[in-house]
Length: 208
Image 1 (cartoon, rainbow, N blue to C red):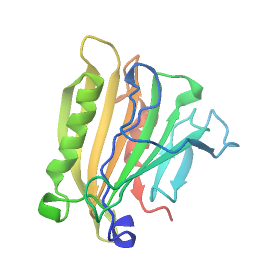
Image 2 (cartoon, one colour):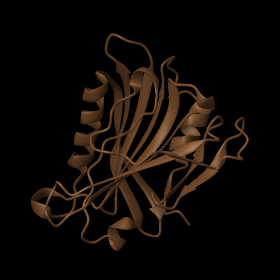
Image 3 (tube, helix red, strand yellow):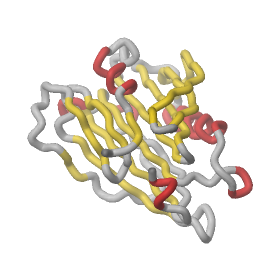
C-alpha cells in the first residue's frame, strides 16, 4: 500500500467525474489524462489494474479507453506532499455516463495522526456540494479484503437537485488511504445496473 511506501506524504483530493452535467473542474493542476488498455474491446467488461493507484477493479463495458490523472500538492503542510490519482472513463466515449476511482494517499488525520472515517464523509459531502446534488440513500460500509486489510466507509446514492440522473459514491478508508469509487448516469439507473454493481463490488486494493 502507498501508506507504507510514502511515509512523508499526505494526500487530499477532489474526485474527477469526466463529463456531462456531472463534470467538475478539479482543484489544482492535474496531469493530462493518458489512455490505457487501448486494445480492449469496447463492448466487453474487463479487469483493470492501476499500479499508480494501487488497486484492481472490473471496468464495465464501454471503458476500453481508461484514463489516469494525477496531482501533487504540498500546501497541506510543509513536510507533506499531497498525492491524488484519478482513474476514469466515459462509457463508449459519451459524456453523461461513466465511472471513476480516486485514490488519495497518506491522508493526514486530526492533529497529524492517522486519518479517521469522518474525513471520508467530509470528502463525499464536498463532492455532493460541488455538483449541487442531494443524498437519496446511504448506508455505512465495512468490508474485508484479506491479508488483514479492512475498509470502513459509506455508500451514497445522490441526485442533482432540480435535475435528472443518479450518482453512486462509495468512500472507504483503507490502511490510512482513502478510495472514492463513483459512477454516474444522467438518465439514472446507476444502482440497478449490474455492470456498475460489479464495478463497485470487484474493487480490490493492491495492483498485483
